[in-house]
Length: 115
Length: 112
Image 1 (cartoon, rainbow over the protein chains, first blue to last red):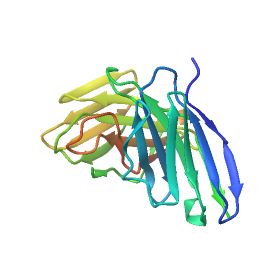
Image 2 (image 1 turned 120 degrees about the horizontal axis):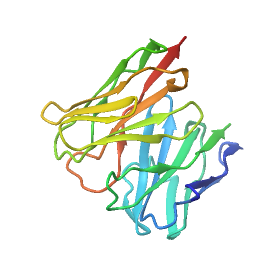
Image 3 (image 1 turned 90 degrees about the vertical axis):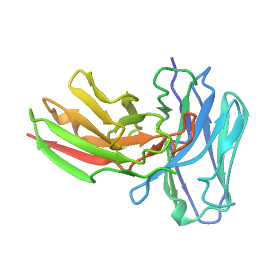
Image 4 (image 1 turned 60 degrees about the vertical axis):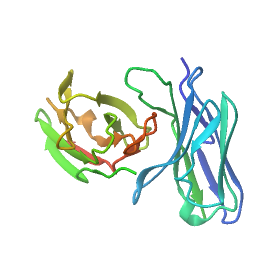
């Protein structure tokens, strides 16, 4: 089975540019999560969806960040305008409610560098 | 929210046993997870504890004490490939659902 698929794997952009990160969750999973990882702050939960509906976006750092899930197989995380402090690895993860362990399955991440 | 604390770094030698500790906020507890993350890769699931006691899975075991808000991950017969970051995670306090809050991770270095 295909795992969580993220794109792009690497993105280098200049401050002020718009960045869009994409995620395809595992088919049939009903939860989708966006995390950000940095050395200083570790792995931070930004936002998560259940059945395409945003449940908790309290981790989104500011209005420059937005996330959408138009259907069960696709989500985007957008940063506009981007700033150097947004440089991080952004992970998407999905899970299935009712599964014994409730484990999250992570994509390989999108490494963002804002110059 | 959730406060999860674990040591930043640990070192050990091949063949040894290492214990990585984790403390968490106990209010509304809904399970404790351990993930492994190799450098440059995604976190992968290792274990899940919801009841007190020890869960064994091959060379890895995880222990939980709900009353103390304490867990540990035990790695036996260490191998070089076990060098990685080990992340403790739990749902936000007093919240149901599957979102997880992660500790900052313990970087384990295994030397020969």
